[in-house]
Length: 313
Ligand SMILES: Nc1ncnc2c1ncn2[C@@H]1O[C@H](COP(=O)(O)OP(=O)(O)O)[C@@H](O)[C@H]1O
Ligand SMILES: [Mg+2]
Image 1 (cartoon, rainbow, N blue to C red):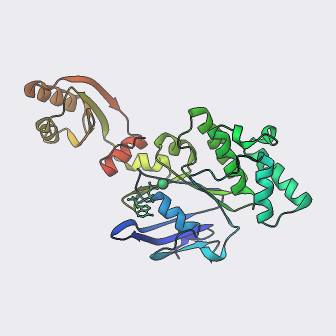
Image 2: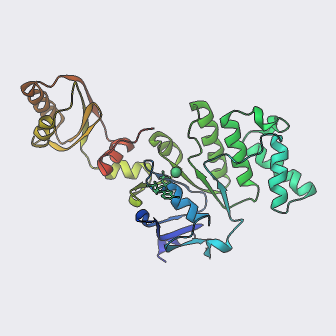
């Protein structure tokens, strides 16, 4: 193993998984150190869930290895807390009763169980709802309870699969804050998302995944800086025109063009020349331009440049 994996809680080396003919995860390697908040960012179907299922020992890789604290994943149970995408709690029990049930499965009893239950309720800010029945919880509260369950064993690595999907902004925020508190305690987190804004806010390091491959990795700032110096010009058009796309591509000030529903995203060297060129071209082709927006590179434009696709819900 290289120096970059020294001291890592998790080392994935060339993980590979096929479902029949479909290569879902294709030689994926990454490592996570204590206290890091590592995000796998990618569109639906990119292979995120399959990857973390292998990390957590739920799925066996066809090829490659997972080391947790230097041990094969199968021998490292207890080191990893796994919070699956689907909430797995008992609705007819209270929050505390749920935690007691899962805590007993881990061998916790008596005072130790009560103390740990109190701690995890505190971490996810559910202490004031401890004796409420879970059936009455909103989606966000149920997710937080799910995270609390994943924390019972005091894992060094917490793995969360799209923990904010389907939640309103306030509930999402509650989840993100819980993850931030955990990281401050030194717990490493691996989480998957297809929300760019969330990844940008939460993650100290990101792996961008597409078609089962890690196509870029770094802190959000590094990824944006590495995305090239070009500015992004977004041109909203009245209708799609292949001739306009091809014509834009041929303009000297334009580096790249991606057509996404209803607009063109251009990477440009020289914004004024590119803008003038695009407008003249659209006019000549009879394509109405309904909006123009010049943006500095951000994670979204980087993602677009890497994958040629926008990330949407
Ligand atoms: N149990 C399965 N059987 C067959 N194909 C699957 C199965 N699970 C996932 N896939 C396929 O593998 C690819 C990766 O899926 P997944 O890991 O769930 O991606 P993500 O979590 O990024 O949305 C997708 O093309 C998906 O359709
Ligand atoms: Mg998934």
